[in-house]
Image (cartoon, rainbow, N blue to C red; front, side, top):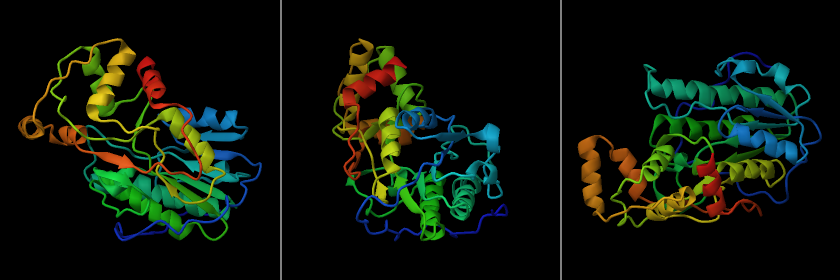
Length: 321
């Protein structure tokens, strides 16, 4: 079992990279050994662990309490004993108030080198399948019906570290370990934070919002649907996938659904998109406005998988908390 520094699988993102050709069949069985789930205590992990247990898997959840901070020297050995599949959710995600002196290096240490170390040790331990939670942000922040063969266009250090980790998985997994990469769009669910939570608070307060004229489409995925996609990833054809909820929504549609779930009115009024962008520039909130007015949709194809929760029910569960 390797416990030294992870090999350097990449000196930077390679935008020309593409997912490997689609395989026929479902891949090798993962066996009846435990499934290691990293980041088990996180937002997604708290949904994934019970979903796998309900499906009959023996889950070995690990988080910061078990392995400490993840980096290139993390020793996963004790947690990989007997494991036949790994679901790697742990990551350094977006930081609202960044304090790292070199954010790009901080993201790479966890998301690239920490992942590379786990892949190498999992390969040596005989793990048969590695499921890696990436992000649709590796393809950029806008686009329509993006599929796994779209051009990688990471726009921030987080997304760069994720595409590098995908490439590390391809390079380091070896011939005896199948790999599944999931690139979800915006994930929502009980306890969601960030801009989604901010939108919910605005709707709950009944504030008028100047978004009625926005004509866009966004793919989302409810965290329980994502957890079910992870379950499916343990047995499906090895590949790269973009799981999503059944319907893409415009920003006004999303706000109406949220308001309905809260039993509140959706108070929207029209404002030209150019004026919204100008207001974003003036207030320092341009990136948030961009996400509200531009489209980002994915193909959603995943080897026969369908989300168990419909879009409206998923949003109701998110609001209910």
